[in-house]
Length: 111
Length: 153
Image (cartoon, rainbow over all chains, first blue to last red):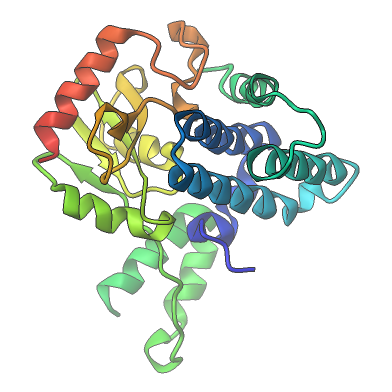
């Protein structure tokens, strides 16, 4: 796979904890939601692409090759469906934001 | 050995330790026709950078956004990393203090106030009372905007 985050794809992403990975993914999710709210389709789409790039990179990480992988890929699908699909799962933006923010706080709790 | 290779090997030394360094030092890359993948380079901005230069830095990431970390004490910033955490580390290694570092995103083509976005994982710092990716203290936001005006033009 040709990842956009080329340096991270060379291994440094896998050295992050799962919480740090999800927190960083959440940052891009947040950006996509913000730009969607502001009606900027271009910025929304590129934030979506960056989020998907990080999710796909995470899916390649050996520490996710277990029961966690299913949840990760479900989150990917729900996020895509919310941003560019029909929101068939009935997710609300604040719920999505809150979920990822908890990961960010957990990852940075000692700072 | 070219300067670029030395940089790559220096990175390898940091990541993997001396053994890999010794191994790589023995390899003659010049004769291997080996292409290193393009790696983003973190730049520390202590003087001034133009929006056009920012656009160049943004290119590898779909050309719209540049992640930056601002040191509000030293009034410098780091740009060009794939993660704010990488830029944060670069500034810490240069003597910055973590409490002075804030992550932002710059959209060089955006002409309104939305061109600066206060949103980064590194901003989540419960010990400083900042519990979101936003920069919650508006006085710090003002300082950051001021530094951005000073450094980008």
